[in-house]
Length: 140
Image (cartoon, one colour):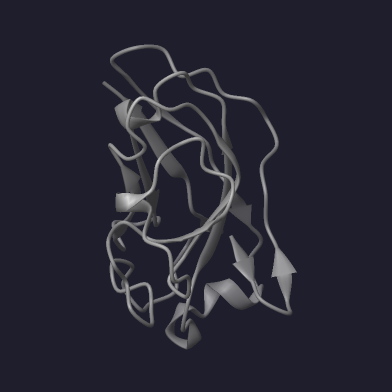
């Protein structure tokens, strides 16, 4: 996740995606960083790298802590193609990922169709926790 002009948060630890298994990859955002004041968020950019032989099997979500919401990034997109290569999913792109074919290596509009703000995530800072926004990858 990127707070444009402020900070980039990432996790470069590889995660295997076995068939029929829900897996997650967490990004920890330290307390006091700009993203903890989500009420000021007007757009969201998520860059993903996934090596997978059939990306249409994947369901990719951004999940906020404390049940603050879920944002669909890309689900069952890409046909029989493979891989997300430095793919940026954002609310400000023009090309919609739901009509694109894999491999994905560009900037795409979020599958959920967020127009100006990440409406799937509630506008409150997570309380009692550091900001953890794990994108859940689900392979069927």
